[in-house]
Length: 268
Image 1 (tube, rainbow, N blue to C red):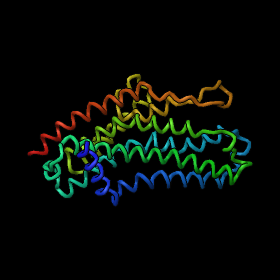
Image 2 (image 1 turned 60 degrees about the vertical axis):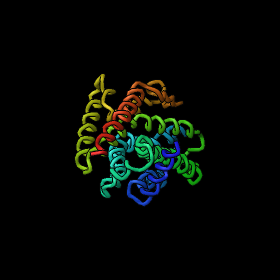
Image 3 (image 1 turned 180 degrees about the horizontal axis):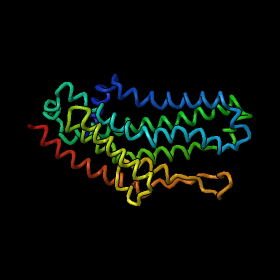
Image 4 (image 1 turned 90 degrees about the vertical axis):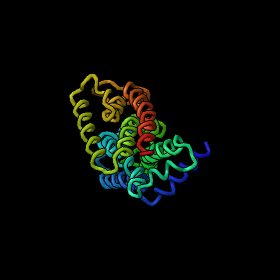
């Protein structure tokens, strides 16, 4: 366990000045800030809308952009950026020859990659909550954010998005370990992402078998429960849906298989 934490600490020091690390922090900040500015300058368009509807419009922009579009591509980028450090320096053999169990080194690198994605989604939730409440204070008449508390709901939504992305992240992590160039894992990931988009778009019954479709399926299953023709009165979040279970299963299988693949590769 000591080797794992040493390796995890090493990953932080190696990546703290990289684009991947700062992208995990700046992406949610910049996107949420831009949406907040748009809401502030067009606050009159939301005048008269109930608090829940205002929250849904505000948070929905980030969720649709991040969950349906950016999250799969972000996982591809983060997985590569963490492993690119070793590829560029050609230090894989050195890393696996350290007096630390190979399992600890591999696990630390994998869980650090998970941490960066988790951090990004957590910041999306926190910035959405923070900026939403700030807008409610600045424009209390038009933007009635204070009329509804969506903090717990948003945390649940982004946690589900994180779980739904584990399958993608695990596959891309393994691909970026096997290949040193960015084009191969990026190309495979992009093709799979397109396949996932198409499968969800045509409502294919077995779309959940494609890991790259899981974030979109997660968002699709998180709909407000209300009667047709009436505004929503509540949002019910079912975190552990079919797609999330498949994502967790894929992540577990790929994680274990990846260790044996990389272990054999590292000694060549």
